[in-house]
Amino acid sequence: MNRLDALLRPLIPLIRPVYGGAGLALMFHRLIPDGQTPRLPALETTPARLEEALVWFERRNYAFYSPADLRRFLRGETRPARPFVLFTFDDGYRDNLTLAYPVFERHGVPFTIHVTTGLPDRTAVLWWYLLEDLIERGETIALELDGQTHRFETDTPAAAAQTRAALRPRLKYASPSEFARLVERLFRARGLDPLAPTDALALTWDEIRRLDADPLVTIGAHTCSHRVLSRLDEAEARAEIGEAKRILEARLGHVVTHFAYPYGARREAGRREARLVAECGFETALTTRYGNLFAAHAAAPLALPRYDLGHCPAPACLDLIASGALALRVNRLRRVMRL
Ligand SMILES: [Zn+2]
Image (tube, rainbow, N blue to C red; front, side, top):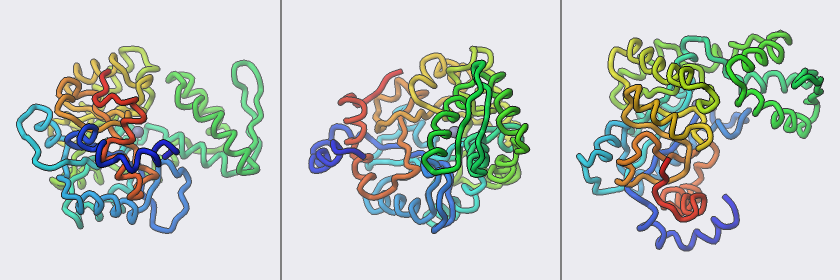
């Protein structure tokens, strides 16, 4: 939230009828036990904060939608009498089962998990946690990049933050071969098992099947290895999307038609990626671009907006988000973002 949001707040009753739309989708990643300090605050919240958000929508008489409900809305098969909200979790962390699921069960509220198939397959590297493991050692990291040896310090919180800021984009935007090289040199060469965070934090196929058996839960696709799709060539991107669908359907025994882009900003998931997602047979796909959901999104069901609620389920935030006030500011007054 910024200062402009404080100015917008008194205008919410005027903004809501125009920008509130029919509903909204929310994104979470991990839940950690209440009282535990987050390692990556942008990705981790607690069951108490999740429940607070859920109750906020219950009190305002929102309908809780699954992706199938959303698809029916976008096809014009239902005309919602009240606003709706979708709760979604990305990547497929085990705490979605152990900590989030009980909250949704208690309230009888549906939720969606977008699973990166390489996590239960134990092939995808959760590099953002692996990097934390490395930084938490507090050692100097000497690394050759672009033909030069760089030294990254991690002994103070400020130095660690600087190192994080320098290395995260390197890992995130690396091509598949660069990424494999970085994993070897940065982590494995220092004695870190690249798959240790995956083993420790990700759902197994058995756990995913257990969740999938509950009608409250929808399993959606989230690629195989969680690379930035726009950085891949077309064949690689298509394989990441199409193989994920094939693997999920084989493991779950039913069709999977809902997708969420890993890193869903415009430069990471644009027109080409939406076309590939359509060609692979998906019917709805969520980005990470802010915005509320309107009937007009029927024209762009593979580029639907969603709000990152990982670290901001405070009621003050929810009012700004649900009313569309935040989207109004971020999207400079446009209501329905096109690709
Ligand atoms: Zn993700």
